[in-house]
Length: 260
Image (cartoon, rainbow, N blue to C red; front, side, top):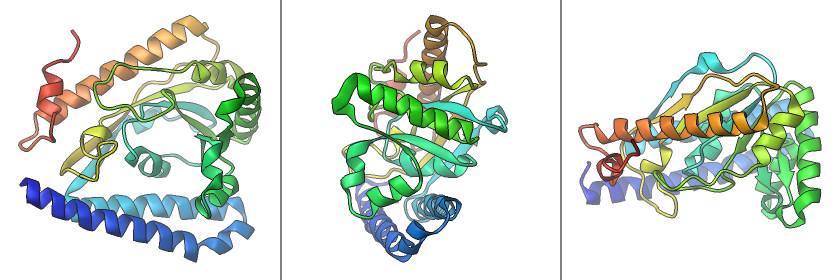
């Protein structure tokens, strides 16, 4: 059902299933809070896989990952585009042991916040400016030294597909501090799971993992190269979505405005 009514019905069914499954998995998995962190991370990975399955079965929204070979075997910094709530759970299964940079306010949410602490994500107090940056760098270094992938949504919040980029400098500070390869990540999830919308559109979300930037490059060069690579790849993925037989809303309109 690709009609507006069909999309609305399937989206509503999925949204109910998504929140029920999320709540149920947190309740049934509450014992993981006192177990090893590795067990809790496996629960987080399972949640992402179940939700991806639900999205495909109910809404007809699948996903494709390109460039897995670009993920290093050891610690690295993943700098990702952020267009949708989809990114927060669907990217988890792609990595061995990701530590995600999140706003500390999320820890106030019962159960969810407790699990964020258990996963040893990197929690940032955005109201403390310089002190928050110092704490983020220290926590990220500890996670990286333990061999984990540090994942940051470089624009800080969800941005609609095609929006003017707004990269924050925090990811460059992480790159300097961690001394590990930086892996850019582009996607087009916002076309199929739009921000501030209950609609979930059929099609194929594409995640493209781009070639890594080795450690030790000059900051200005890294910022220029990484942001250019992510933006160009994201626009390519918008154009690809626009060529689908039944493209998501605005895909063709956005593709027509692509730079260059």
